[in-house]
Length: 267
Image (cartoon, rainbow, N blue to C red; front, side):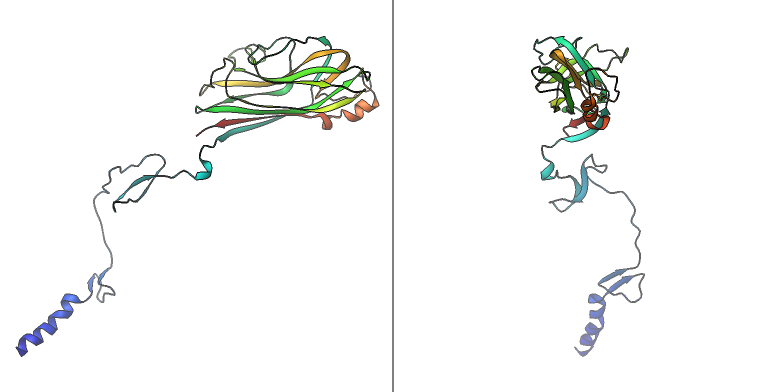
C-alpha cells in the first residue's frame, strides 16, 4: 500500500496539470504557441446576401442575419438629388385678357411662357418616386392705383423628347397657383409656388430609367392696362412703364428667381 500511494502522487500532476503545445512552461490549462487550421467555413449561406451580417445565431451556431432597420428611418424617403436654379430674366406681360381656368394635366399653350433658366431634367433609378418643387420670385406691376392684375404660375412636366429639346411639345401642367396683385405703381409681392408631383405627363407613375423635364411657366389672366413683371429686373432708364422707383426696387439682386427641385425615392 505504501508503494501504491507514492505512485499515485507522482501521476496526479500529470493528469490535472497544465498542457502546452510548442510551449515548455504552459501558463494555462491548454497553452498553444501557434495553430494552423485548414478546410472551409461551413455555413447554411456562406456568401451571405445584401443587407445581412455574420453573427452567432440564437441556436448557438454562426450564420447570417438581416441588418435591422433604424426605427427613425422606418417609412421614410430618400432624397436622390437636389437641383437649385436661379434666373433674373423673368417675364414681362401686358395686354392680355384670358381668364379661362387651367386644370391639372392640361397642355402647354401659347398663353404660358417658360421662364428662361428655370428648367431641368431628372431620372429615377427605382420605383416609388416623386418630385418636390419650389419656385420663388418677386412679382410687380406698373399701373394706376385702380388697375389690378391677375396671373398664374405653375410647373410643367414631360418626358424628355429625343428631338427638339427646346420646344414645348409634350408639357403638361402639374402644379398651378393663381395670384392677384392690386396697388399703385410698383406694387409688388413675393410669389411662392410649391408642390409634390408623383405622376408624369401621362398621369402615370414616373418610369424607372426614363428622363423627364420640369419647367416653371407663368401666364397673364387679366393684364389689360398695367404691365406685369415676374422675376424681371429693370436697369435701363429707357425701359417703358418704369421710373426711378422701379429701377430701385427691381434690381437683379432683389428679384432673383429660384427654382429648387428634389427627387424623392422610397427605399
